[in-house]
Length: 208
Image (cartoon, rainbow, N blue to C red):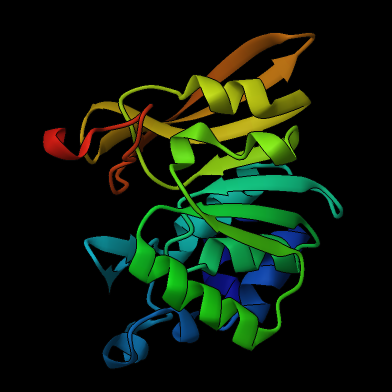
């Protein structure tokens, strides 16, 4: 994504802008769609999933307020693009993907790119990764009907959780939650559209 395009839409964090410039988005999309890789639009990646538009990836990365060295949990690896951006910003990323095909394909791509600091697992993302908790930041790149309690429990004191939430599939509000002295403070950051968050604390496969 061209830096000027992101800056024109209000992205200002130097680390985010540098990472978005450094990560080759065209490698994270299907070969037939590579000509569109740097357009500011989501693109299908197969299996009913999408890669978010560059602006949304940059915005969520900025809203997370990450710092180099932070431990970040990502729910919904998808193409691996968001994880790659966060790793390029110097974070250690624990990322979870539910779909076997994406898990295998994306894992192979991330290894090929030699990106360090990304730990990928296949499991129900709504349960988090309790054995690696707590996390200073948690980012959820799919929308569910509620905020999964396991994720709140795995958020470190002073941490930030960014998640789309909505009572109807693919119609959500982007919520940013902070844990302060054991209490959760939330902000509604506006309307967004993400693929469904499926799992024990998300949409059930039969309700999608």
